[in-house]
Image (cartoon, rainbow, N blue to C red; front, side, top):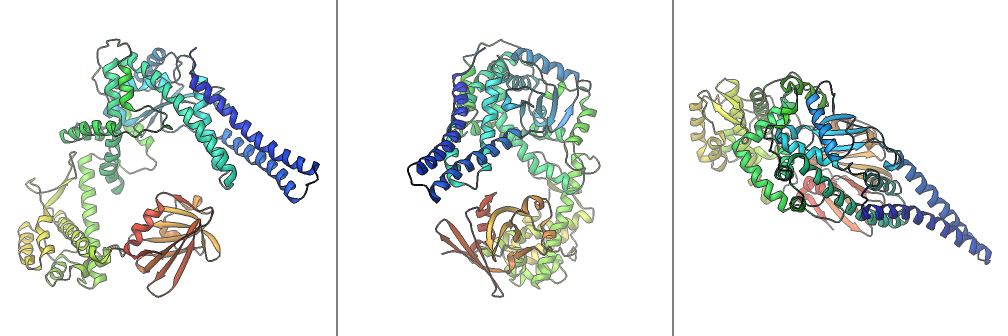
Length: 613
């Protein structure tokens, strides 16, 4: 058995954590006894004794809670009967890594693979072993590269160093949870938190050594060059998966259709333009990879260099796509994908159909926004294209756009923002009119945003048609003529959209307001005050529903005239003044915490109306 000296040191530091707690407890108790014995007993001595007891109870309770934390398996189970080839390969890789194979394989929706155990006593007692396999890896890696990734994960459990290394992993998590449990006690948190950071630094060093040893299993399973290629690909693959989710998967949810996730991602990666982007991203992401003493993984560049010193088994590379290890992938993968989705999105549809539906839906939404702007501004009461163009001809661009602009925009930025939003809304409204008339449709483009094409399949650029009129009122007649030639009915208009639904962006907890503690929800259209303690149970509830509750208070962004932010000793005070003269005062407390980038979100929401004093 080869045991890392760093892992042993981490274990000693873990034991030292409990020694530190005992030292604090008995030290305070001893001071209390000494004070009474020397005739200095009193309230101070009693407080010292009670403080020692409080530390023991508080930390003991926190540690007990942390020890009971159970990680639940997630993802879609993949049985041995359904996918015998995948299981056979995993069993082979486990033998190469010198460990037992998993008891359960799960498909997960992340660019990741992991092996973990349902262990007890911080990993000292073993339990059921799981292998999590990221769906994106099946689309973005070759069979050889997948073997390298999985062998590495199994390699964490090889060579007999499982127990001690698992202990360092689990103990670091348990200590973090312990510190979180004593969060309200600053002195105890400061002392124990500093020690926990030292432990995390040493444990991370032990984990980095383990990562380098596990890379030897990657090389043995797939060959050095293939293992190195897999490492290079993973950061760019993660970047691509995020972009795929934002740019494509999000479209499916908006039109209640279930897409082919794996096939779609493979098509995305296979696009020549995306391929060039990802090759550039590979180099950039590896070169810019951040480094910290708390990182559990060495930098990828260092791992690739270390592989050069590992004997190469000279295996023939397996370039087949990774999904080749799945039996009957065309039928089995859709079922696994459905199991990964939290909600039923609706009937399955091909990507071209999803893009057509999503593009038409977003164009209609833009037309409804233009109609809302026209009605609320009074510039275009019926919300038609012709009325909006007439408003531009009269030089009323800013007035027309004001209802859909952020009220916090600084005055000097309003004209540019008005031009940008009107150019987009007018173009999309024209697209909506053409799609409704059967003269245009949205076409899937894996290399970038979807395209609007006419009946002949040629791309249509409606922003180029409406843009001149946004920039110059004198160009409105030309724009009208161009739109008529394309077949756009100028009297087209959608029903005006209602006020946009509020979405939660971030939270500031434990904020004092009107004599009570509230949580301040920073939303994209305003601020919501929720009684402190209720946030965890309400965070999934739509904000528009919460506005109606008698125990909440909604501050609409459009109603806020100004915000005055005052920094003070240990905190801040924020005074919000409405257009009707009413004021709302908020103040931080010792317990105020930021969930998400709340201060940045607040600054974006209020914009130029937020003044510091």
